[in-house]
Image (tube, rainbow, N blue to C red; front, side, top):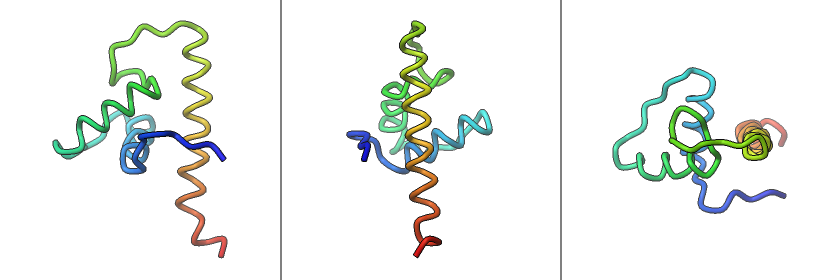
Length: 80
């Protein structure tokens, strides 16, 4: 099991929406948490970090794992 510490499901869900649609609506009270999560996962277009090749690989690995967790969470009720 992989745990993303301090990453709220709502933030992860919003990040996936941003990645797929290029935009996302986030309530102002959730903005700080959302941007922190984007920075931790190094989502380009939301943060201003210079990425090295190794950082990009880590980002895609983290994103892949995050997407798997999101899919598992959304479809878990269907597996019962």
